[in-house]
Length: 85
Image 1 (cartoon, one colour):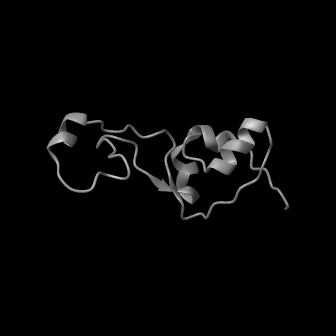
Image 2 (cartoon, rainbow, N blue to C red; image 1 turned 120 degrees about the horizontal axis):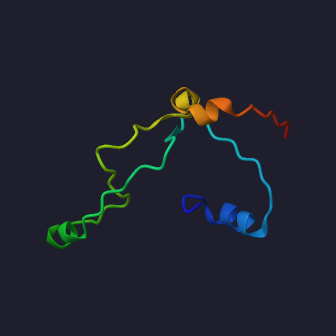
C-alpha cells in the first residue's frame, strides 16, 4: 500500500472502491522483492543519496505485467473480470 499515490491511499482509507489501469509493459513482481539495507555504508558515501532502495541480488526477477501470469500459479487460478468504464 505504501507505493500508492496519496489520492489512492485516501480512497483506501475511506473504503472506497476504484478501478485503475496500468500498461501491459509495466514491470512488477509476483512477490515483494527484498531490499538491501546498509546503513553503515551511507555514512562513508559522498554525493546525492539514493532515491530508490537497492534490491537484494537473489530476488524473484521483475517482469512485465503481461507476463506475470506465467510466473504465478496463484494468479493463473484467478478468473479474469472485465469492467467497462
